[in-house]
Image (cartoon, rainbow, N blue to C red):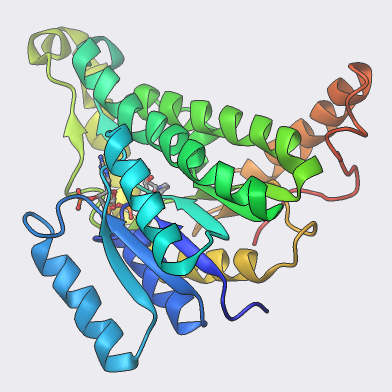
Length: 298
Ligand SMILES: NC(=O)c1ccc[n+]([C@@H]2O[C@H](COP(=O)([O-])OP(=O)(O)OC[C@H]3O[C@@H](n4cnc5c(N)ncnc54)[C@H](OP(=O)(O)O)[C@@H]3O)[C@@H](O)[C@H]2O)c1
């Protein structure tokens, strides 16, 4: 399709973000691979990406962006615009996993998680949307999770952050359709990335200790997730297919997973019910809601 499409990705140092960077750049996109502290904690990751770009002559530019910092996000978006003149796709990928019994998660831990997983995309979208709306085109792509549709014990706060992200992304899809901008949600199942090594654990151990058998939930869930994790390149390949899908033909949700948890069924059902609600509120035409465009795998 468009060989000059410009893509901005959050959290490109490792995992999905790193694979999106490589996969999309190899497919001819100009990629702004953003990360926290590319001169310090991520210096090795940044230099590996730059070395790959050099070796394969790929149009990748590494930029600093901490999604919890308004000014940092605005600087990164402005730097991308100054260099490339446009942003066609913003991939909200930065995020982390928090595990533990909900009562043992402190309010500060909850605040930090939401600041990254939910408010991070809020900041990125607010920074790129004025440019996309000027272009009258663009894609906001949100890396949610199967945990954005299903709930397991000891994952409640992570689920809450992804459910919140899904609500925002879905509302954006209705509000922006009339301006030629698509908002898309990708829901990966469990994949082998750095996420399990970077997991934050509920801090209030004294409360966890009083939970009897339920205190084993976090270990059971994390063990099951990491032992059945798939190859993360599958998600990068799915994202490339989504980016390649012509404007107006993308689905709202794509479930990509090594295992079927019934998320496609949830997506199909909520799509039908959302359609009824939008029609009931007299909003179906304004939001360009398309009944036949079923949610499904990428
Ligand atoms: N792997 C899975 O099974 C899975 C499944 C469903 C959804 N997801 C989602 O996929 C996304 C990527 O995760 P991953 O699996 O690829 O894990 P990962 O390898 O740990 O990558 C997470 C990325 O987010 C970045 N990040 C964290 N906080 C940030 C901040 N404040 N500002 C900018 N970047 C920040 C990390 O950067 P640093 O290097 O600076 O920490 C890292 O680049 C996350 O949103 C995650 O919730 C993952």
